[in-house]
Length: 424
RNA sequence: GGAGAAAUGGCAGAGUGGUCGAAUGCGGCGGUCUUGAAAACCGUUGUACCGAGAGGUACCGGGGGUUCGAAUCCCUCUUUCUCCGCCA
Image 1 (spheres, helix red, strand yellow):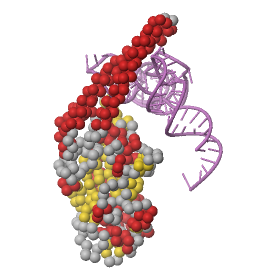
Image 2 (cartoon, rainbow, N blue to C red):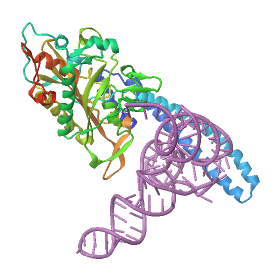
Image 3 (cartoon, protein in one colour):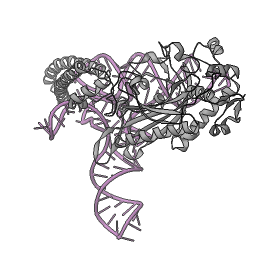
Image 4 (cartoon, rainbow, N blue to C red):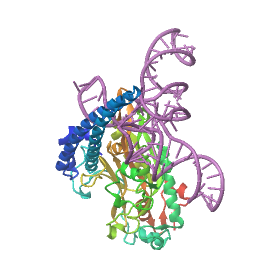
């Protein structure tokens, strides 16, 4: 959420930047500014009336003490009129504030000045790559066939238990899953992140804080009976730990990591893109979340990007890093780097991580602020996060890229976690 | 799930209708004293909104109500604690 003051002071900049996200804000911006002026006026009148009423009320008390009953009674009459006016005004103010908020909430975050123009993922900018694309022979199998042949993952069984997109991991497939989780967590801790195990179900306030609500509730599974949501990513509960918090500047950076299953409805996706592990309703992910001083957040973003790259290097997976264009970057993000690994039997790139700086967009929703010396007012912090990493597509790439006549080789860094060097 | 008690500032804890944004203690910050520190003493110490400023308004778990006036009374929701039941 952008702050109203920023919008008013930088209207042209907001308009121009949101165009990069293909968002035409001209109408809504005018409405917002009009509503805000309205809000101020109403507030002023209301405060004045309220102040008057307070004075009269105090007087009445005094008059009663002095037994000046008649005077007190006439003051009462006066106050009743005021009270009605106040009631009306505060109702108005409430309505104005609600519509103002409903409008502001529709505005996406401003993209960083380096975000390229573009309409979809084809316009993303490749900023670097690592390793070379592996060419397999013609008998190479896609991961879903490897998973079946070696009895690692049972997609049909998941359909029986739950539905499509809820696979059952078995045998060495299950062990590999657990190994990756532990590997990612241990690496994150080595890199200075503190591990947390958050709830997998969150309330509405949390969903609002990180930007999933009110707009994208279709993405999340909703537990209607209790009005709770299954988390689509650990970002939601972990960032919300600091909702409604005022930190000290010396607390930065706050670096957290969490493993959680993630639940996504992914309504509307179809076809070969959802085959096998490519897109699931439930998947495992280790997330890194950082809360940082505004002046240091982009430096921290670079550090996070470097860190995610180091994980992929240890797993010996070729990858490329994309800077997302305006059309592909998320509603809440100012700058996002996607990591894609090459899945050599499917012959395509799979997104395995998304590392973003949200600047103060989430912080404003979260009321996540900090105090700094020389500044009496609390300032909005910056929030960042990244997948480190999402498991299914990593598994897909590992299985496909490392297959040979003997089986599937486990990368060295992972062997102490799996306890085996090959799947055969 | 049943019965009862409670929710106040960073923490502890007073306050049962008017001058209470709220005593007191602890903590934090600034100062005096000191070579330095501690102790002692003095001062200060929340958030949001409106206002150029002076200043004003709101907030005592959330929401609603009674009243000229609510931290204080009523309704409701949430959370916590104690006891009982069930249970990984």
